[in-house]
Length: 216
Length: 245
Image (cartoon, rainbow over all chains, first blue to last red; front, side):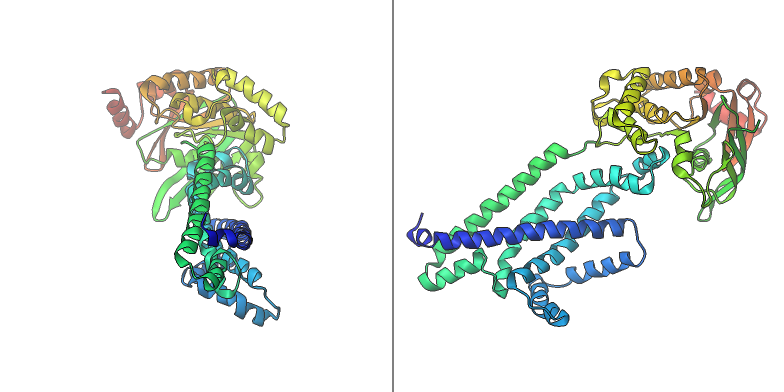
């Protein structure tokens, strides 16, 4: 390993830890939010369905960086609290990725054929039971691949958090570069790290899908 | 004694299309009624109205005196009383065969899993699939899937079963394995309404045949009379076309 990396390894690993924490929290929160939004939209719940639709449209029409700025500067000043950069980044990523995940999950739920839903209803299962026992397990299995590609996107997005001052891997690397001026080595090192982790996420998704996919 | 299933003057439209026109039908306990007629005549819609999968617009449907539709309908109770078997089987693809048959027993009838599985295994044995309990639906043939679907319907101890073209999407060599199960059920006295194009089966098993065209019940007759001397010209034409090839 190049000397400049070795010398800064503890610091870089700390930054990597922040990146991973950011990604994990955002993935979990975004998936939870996406699931709720997807179910509300799938069931066409009045009012709330429209509210979530507007949310999705807003997020899809807003650059990620702007979402982060909103969460770091605008939301705290509106609601009157002091935001940490890390907290604001988590909020921004959850809101951002949640909108995309919601649409993916909704498509998965909608892809469960009406005939199978009717079969469940015909045995006396109520609509909520059909959703919980039949539609969700099937629909979610179908979206595993897209879900994991969202996680890969999200993992790379975390680098944007450096702009609002989160000391994650990209931001940390740039700090080191400012001191050491070894851009090629440093950038190759972090790019390789992103690549390895993203490939691992993809692989995990493929393995999970292979295990759980439903043939029909 | 009043009929087990009573359909009185039922009409249904999908948008501007009137798919059922004043249909009246009454099915007693133990009756085997076959509904036939050309495609698009409303046969499937009629039986889906009976268990409320398709809400009817006008008229009245009663199952053992209980009104179907309306706000007060206790759907789980009503539907558990009436089993249904679909053209495309509609097994839950993410569960194995045993779980497919046990699901509603556990969540509708509140049987314990052990009790439900025990009952499911007996039913699977009855339809000749005891060995497939742990298989996934995708690994079964169409005929096997349909027999699982029949076991799933039977698992709730229904008072009657509705069959919606149960053999229409099967390869020819699998039709008889499914029909045999249905014939056996009929022999055991199960009340059933069967939408089918299998006229040989209808003749053998049905007590009565209902002939529908364009959303109307044109004719209802004991099966022997329907096949030997259909009353309406439309039914005569339908039968001659079916039998001529």
